[in-house]
Each structure stands twice: as C-alpha cells, then as structure tokens.
Length: 113
Image 1: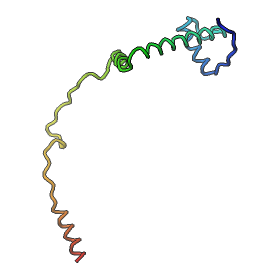
Image 2: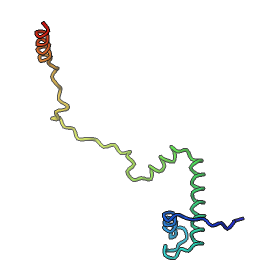
Image 3: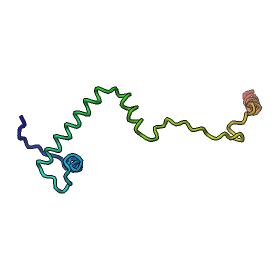
Image 4: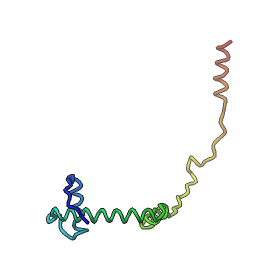
C-alpha cells in the first residue's frame, strides 16, 4: 500500500517532470499541480523500470543494431571515390638517393681524422 511521504524535488528535476506532463498526463505545463508531480514521477519510474527489464532481456548488440536500423543513414552505404590518375600521391616514387648522406659522412670522417 502507498505511504504518504514528503520528498523535496530539486528544481531541475521538477522542470523535467513538468516537461513530461503533456506526454504522460496530457496536461500543459502551466496546469501541473503537486499531486500531478507525484503521478508523473511514478509513471516515469515505471517506464524506466520496464525499459531496464527490456534491456536486460535483449542482448546489447541486437538492440544497438536495431536502433541503428531505425536511423535513415546508418552508414551501411558504400560510396566509391572518383579515381584521379594524376594524383601525386599515387605516382611511383623514385628510389631514395643516398648521395647526400655519403657526402655528409665523408665530412665527419675528415673532421675525425
């Protein structure tokens, strides 16, 4: 049986509860009373409990793929990029020349001697 208990509700939670009044009770925010806040709280807690039970029953991967299936652009489309034959990154590069390294090494060898 329900027990009458007074609970202080933080202003941000009260604002959230009132914002849900149209959806849950069909009342505009301006007409929400104290007892309506109690009803809203009970119904939202019940919704949360039902959603938690459903989440436990459905494996997370299945749930995630189902939600992603609802999103219009789920990223499953493959788009081909235009081919550019003149791209400098795709041109074959010349082999590295070690001439500079050899000259630098000779300078150090001369200084050491």
